Image 1 (cartoon, rainbow, N blue to C red):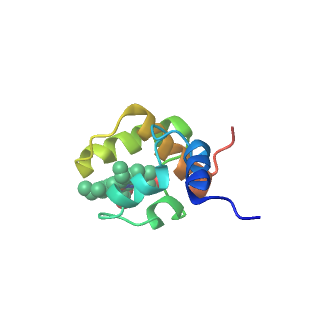
Image 2: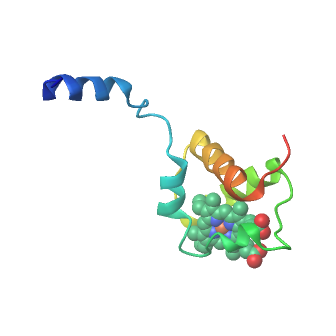
Length: 90
Ligand code: HEC
Protein backbone atom coordinates (compact mmCIF):
# COMPACT_ATOMS: atom_id res chain seq x y z
CA UNK A 1 0.00 0.00 0.00
CA UNK A 2 1.33 3.44 -0.87
CA UNK A 3 1.12 6.06 1.83
CA UNK A 4 1.11 9.68 0.67
CA UNK A 5 4.42 11.40 1.35
CA UNK A 6 2.96 14.27 3.40
CA UNK A 7 1.34 11.73 5.69
CA UNK A 8 4.60 9.83 6.21
CA UNK A 9 6.39 13.09 7.00
CA UNK A 10 3.74 14.15 9.48
CA UNK A 11 3.97 10.78 11.21
CA UNK A 12 7.77 10.83 11.43
CA UNK A 13 7.63 14.35 12.85
CA UNK A 14 5.31 13.08 15.56
CA UNK A 15 7.48 10.05 16.26
CA UNK A 16 10.83 11.89 16.52
CA UNK A 17 12.13 12.59 20.02
CA UNK A 18 11.64 15.99 21.63
CA UNK A 19 14.24 18.40 20.23
CA UNK A 20 15.17 19.46 23.77
CA UNK A 21 16.69 16.04 24.56
CA UNK A 22 20.45 16.51 24.36
CA UNK A 23 22.23 14.20 21.95
CA UNK A 24 25.19 13.08 24.01
CA UNK A 25 27.07 11.31 21.24
CA UNK A 26 26.84 14.38 19.03
CA UNK A 27 27.83 16.80 21.81
CA UNK A 28 30.79 14.63 22.68
CA UNK A 29 31.84 14.38 19.06
CA UNK A 30 31.63 18.16 18.63
CA UNK A 31 33.44 19.35 21.75
CA UNK A 32 35.37 16.51 23.34
CA UNK A 33 37.64 15.01 20.76
CA UNK A 34 40.15 17.80 20.16
CA UNK A 35 42.44 17.25 23.18
CA UNK A 36 42.06 13.54 23.81
CA UNK A 37 40.30 10.58 22.29
CA UNK A 38 38.40 7.87 24.11
CA UNK A 39 41.71 6.28 25.16
CA UNK A 40 41.77 8.47 28.30
CA UNK A 41 38.51 6.85 29.41
CA UNK A 42 39.72 3.30 28.91
CA UNK A 43 43.40 3.45 29.87
CA UNK A 44 44.15 1.07 32.74
CA UNK A 45 45.10 3.89 35.14
CA UNK A 46 42.20 6.21 34.21
CA UNK A 47 41.62 8.79 36.91
CA UNK A 48 37.84 8.74 37.09
CA UNK A 49 36.60 6.05 39.46
CA UNK A 50 32.97 6.94 40.18
CA UNK A 51 29.92 8.55 38.64
CA UNK A 52 30.06 11.75 40.74
CA UNK A 53 33.73 12.14 39.79
CA UNK A 54 32.82 11.62 36.16
CA UNK A 55 30.16 14.32 36.28
CA UNK A 56 32.68 16.77 37.77
CA UNK A 57 35.31 15.92 35.19
CA UNK A 58 32.88 16.36 32.30
CA UNK A 59 31.96 19.78 33.70
CA UNK A 60 35.63 20.72 34.06
CA UNK A 61 36.38 19.58 30.54
CA UNK A 62 33.47 21.54 29.04
CA UNK A 63 35.13 24.63 30.49
CA UNK A 64 38.49 23.58 29.07
CA UNK A 65 36.75 23.05 25.75
CA UNK A 66 35.08 26.45 25.94
CA UNK A 67 31.73 24.72 25.47
CA UNK A 68 28.73 26.31 27.17
CA UNK A 69 26.61 23.30 28.04
CA UNK A 70 23.50 23.13 30.14
CA UNK A 71 23.48 20.86 33.20
CA UNK A 72 21.31 18.31 31.41
CA UNK A 73 23.84 18.16 28.57
CA UNK A 74 26.72 17.64 30.99
CA UNK A 75 24.73 14.90 32.73
CA UNK A 76 23.82 13.28 29.40
CA UNK A 77 27.47 13.15 28.28
CA UNK A 78 28.55 11.76 31.66
CA UNK A 79 25.90 9.04 31.21
CA UNK A 80 27.10 8.44 27.69
CA UNK A 81 30.72 8.00 28.82
CA UNK A 82 29.62 5.70 31.62
CA UNK A 83 27.47 3.58 29.32
CA UNK A 84 30.17 3.30 26.64
CA UNK A 85 33.47 3.29 28.55
CA UNK A 86 33.44 3.34 32.35
CA UNK A 87 30.55 1.01 33.21
CA UNK A 88 30.31 2.07 36.86
CA UNK A 89 28.05 -0.07 39.01
CA UNK A 90 24.71 1.60 39.74
C1 HEC B 1 41.22 21.68 26.24
C2 HEC B 1 41.52 20.25 26.18
C3 HEC B 1 40.40 19.28 26.55
C4 HEC B 1 39.16 19.21 25.99
C5 HEC B 1 38.59 20.02 24.83
C6 HEC B 1 38.47 18.13 26.68
N1 HEC B 1 39.28 17.58 27.62
FE1 HEC B 1 38.83 15.99 28.83
N2 HEC B 1 40.71 16.03 29.58
C7 HEC B 1 41.68 16.97 29.27
C8 HEC B 1 42.87 16.70 30.04
C9 HEC B 1 44.18 17.50 30.00
C10 HEC B 1 42.59 15.56 30.82
C11 HEC B 1 43.49 14.86 31.81
C12 HEC B 1 44.28 13.84 31.07
C13 HEC B 1 45.21 13.12 31.97
O1 HEC B 1 44.93 13.03 33.18
O2 HEC B 1 46.20 12.58 31.44
C14 HEC B 1 41.22 15.16 30.51
C15 HEC B 1 40.58 14.08 31.08
C16 HEC B 1 39.26 13.76 30.87
C17 HEC B 1 38.55 12.70 31.56
C18 HEC B 1 39.13 11.76 32.62
C19 HEC B 1 39.77 10.54 32.00
C20 HEC B 1 40.17 9.55 33.09
O3 HEC B 1 41.35 9.50 33.43
O4 HEC B 1 39.29 8.79 33.57
C21 HEC B 1 37.28 12.73 31.12
C22 HEC B 1 36.13 11.84 31.54
C23 HEC B 1 37.20 13.79 30.14
N3 HEC B 1 38.41 14.39 30.01
C24 HEC B 1 36.05 14.14 29.47
C25 HEC B 1 35.97 15.17 28.54
C26 HEC B 1 34.74 15.59 27.94
C27 HEC B 1 33.37 14.99 28.19
C28 HEC B 1 35.05 16.61 27.08
C29 HEC B 1 34.09 17.45 26.25
C30 HEC B 1 33.27 18.35 27.03
C31 HEC B 1 36.48 16.82 27.15
N4 HEC B 1 37.00 15.93 28.06
C32 HEC B 1 37.17 17.77 26.43
C33 HEC B 1 41.57 17.99 28.36
C34 HEC B 1 40.48 18.26 27.57
